Length: 240
Image (cartoon, rainbow, N blue to C red):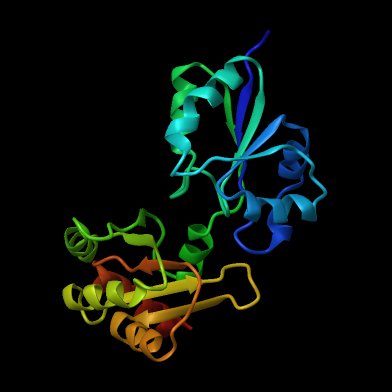
């Protein structure tokens, strides 16, 4: 019997129409789908009429389920792994299983598809010849150290933030960053109430203090070397 295969399949971050034809075909054809939250994934599967067997696999049970799933793959099972939204392994479960498969020489294929931070980066209008992705910042230990590091980073930096932490992050950045440092925050990407707010950190902070918002935030911080970029913007405006 030949060994099985693991597919990491991106799912829509909001609009169900953003899944690829290939992803739908694959989710229909595999033996089993591993889902971060089966209730969330079931909505997607029902929308496309996919009847494939579904099993939970998330950060709270992945260590216990890892060994039997690897054995299934060794025995020839074809498995797809999805997260609630976006690409598995990017600030979501996926890395642990992929690493275990590589150690066992089990084939892995990652499909291209939806992720939240790329649209947010592009919509910011900041320099993208080099950028840094931070995922989620530390909740407590090491958080202030990371914030300070971001303030000194010359490259555009992107990270995810939750609704109850967004004000705190903006306040911390406002303390350590230059007053002219800009930030761009996107939320509800691809959904009906998609919103992007871009401006100086203090102005964006005041916006969210007066207009609290829900959803997962994608924060894009301009690099600290903004003098050169301001000169470029000035030259561009003069040439128009």
